[in-house]
Image (cartoon, rainbow, N blue to C red; front, side):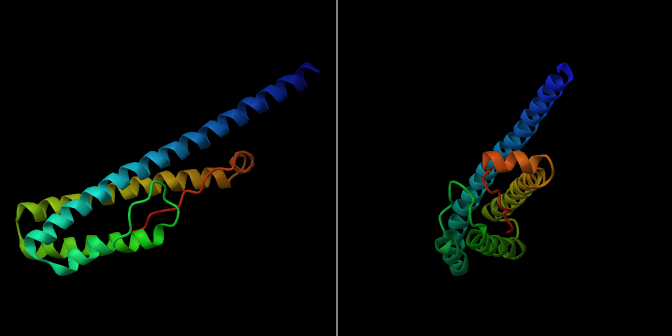
Length: 153
């Protein structure tokens, strides 16, 4: 009787541990998306200023055509495509324009976006793997863990 009670207590503590790992990973992923979202917004502002300064119509069109940044990343495909286009044009300008301060700032923003995207994708991958393996899949099924898509741009 005592050993069964101890085993049940240990199982409950382990389930709580697994739940907390999943929840912590989910929160880290949400914070990583928030950071990525801030960097994307910053790059858009810099790209818009750069488009105005250089008169680059392609960049101005790419910035204006980009969808608004969502609070939660649900469907990353259209956003990723728009952000990829902005990033590529900024990189082209960085190679062509030289050492213009705004161009350097825009290229730096691209690097910060890449770093934030990498951190977000690592966080999302960690949560997805934890939720897909035993015992995390059992706990994730009970608590309905929100989806954590990757942001490929």
